[in-house]
Length: 70
Image (cartoon, rainbow, N blue to C red; front, side, top):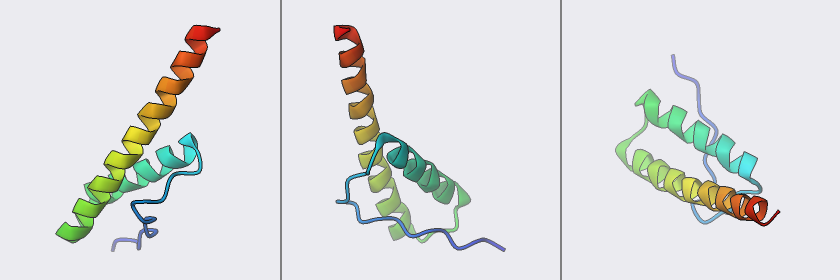
């Protein structure tokens, strides 16, 4: 029997940190891979995952630029 997954925050909510975004992204991937979500929820989760991925990439790029300056 599948466990109830934690609800996802609204798509407009910015992550508190890189680590929080990564943890949420991992939860989304787990939920999507389970295949137990309605299609509309899968689409919303995919869109949120894309936003989180963009946020994480931006954070990594900012750190990379700072390291290059040092």
